[in-house]
Image 1 (cartoon, helix red, strand yellow):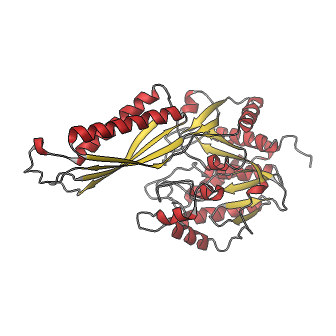
Image 2 (spheres, one colour):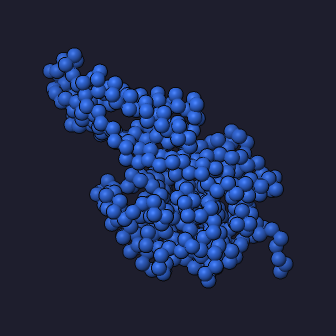
Image 3 (cartoon, rainbow, N blue to C red):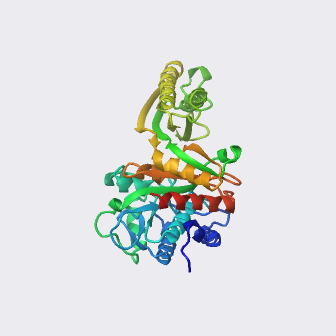
Amino acid sequence: MGIRSDPAEALDGARVAARLDTLWQVALTPAGGADRPAWSAAEAEAMRLVAGWATEAGLRPALDGHGNLWALPAGGATVASSGSHVDTVPRGGRYDGALGTVLALEAAAALPGRVGVLVCAAEEAPRFGAGTLGSRLLTGALDEPALAAMADAREVTAAAARAAFLAELADLPRVAGPPPLHRLRAHVEVHIEPRHELRRRAARLGVVERIAAVHRHAVTVGGESGHAGEVAMADRHDALAAAAELVLAVEDAARRAAARWPATVATVGRLEVEPGAVSVIPARVSAAVEVRGIEPAGIAAVERALVRATAQITDTRGVRVECRPVRGGDPITLDPELAERALGAAGRRGLRAVRTYSGAGHDAGHLAARMPAALLFVPLAGGQSHTPDEDADPADVLAAAQVLVDVLAAS
């Protein structure tokens, strides 16, 4: 058998499709979509599948203490790596996380002995209200005490869930010693794009240059409770009505900021109303405000507007509004050299690739603190991401795999 001049010729599109389908069947819900929460038995089942495929590719799979799956070539040489995650949001899609994981295995098979696979655990946020837990623990961006403070709707802490996850996978080998970050000289993650930008730009591939910062604020509005039928409108200090003004103020601030910094967005994603009775004026509202963007100035503009809005609402409505920051940080710039390498590889293969950004967090963003990292987007072919309708063109998937192999081979 002759030696292939192009390692990407070894890519097996049928195997990619079959493995994506196999992962899709893990915890597939009757209503459609997969339900594999972070550090759950379903995520463990998916990890076990990936570990088996990694062995077939000639890699040695092992779990670290955070539940991340390492699949590296034998020996101690440094390698380039790829991989994503296998947990999902509720009723999640076929491609989110799974795509980057399966393509990493294909790249390792195409470049034997030169590529490792890293699948990070607990990437999705819904279960514990925070995402990318495995990669943040791995890189030191999150500490152990934080896990004890996170709990799901059933009051299971993240620490307890991780312990149960590791016990579920007791049959898999464990990483000896600290996680072997020192063996990775670069990491490239492939992911389904989170929006339909690439189709609009007639692109076959997106090369992410920046990942948005996420700032979160806890807002509490304190008013006065009372009987809904006995307190005159002029005498009310309705906490929910005040919170409604705040929600609209956040939206208005984000729209204004986006006119100058288009990637800036803001969301009030949760309201908790007390006492929550139909015949009682709301006395207290807790709100979660999130601001994202790749330009710090855009985020700052929204946050200044939030401060002004809380002061104004406090004054005009006679309520108490407290706003407390709970998460900050800066946008992440991914490795420029890897980005250029991906753009060049796409060009040589006749594929239109464009520079873009990610408004969502990814494991590659945290790994970027420890090594050169890149993030490649495959265009959505239908629906939205994070839904059962998530879809991708098999030709685009294969194109991304080819570019991935090219980048890893040169890294």
